[in-house]
Length: 124
Image (cartoon, rainbow, N blue to C red; front, side):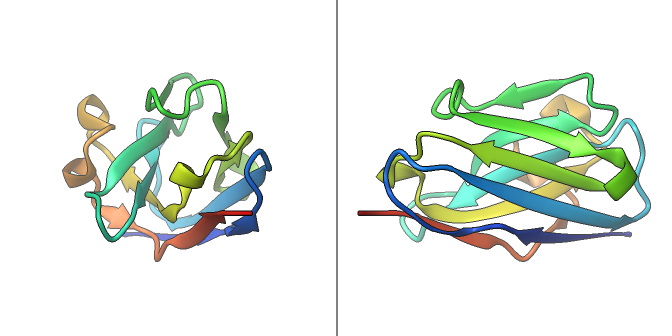
């Protein structure tokens, strides 16, 4: 069992930055992948970024490459999503999740545990 708690969302102007945090507790492993996904009422949940808990593998959706960075702090059992140059289309509820299925890190259905989500709104 893994519990995940996100924080760090909020309202930011276009071009601004935010850092999301995802604190994990419970059973984790260096082979687990932690993923960030986002969802709006009119779109399916989409992959944003993922990192293997060991930190040696990261992956990003094309829409956020060069703007977002995923990282982890093993001592704090926390994964971060640093977001720069935010755009209105980045507005969504952001979720972190964990999976043992590293071959499908970009698929929501592969993830067993999810946080409650944090709202990110990019607007002037």
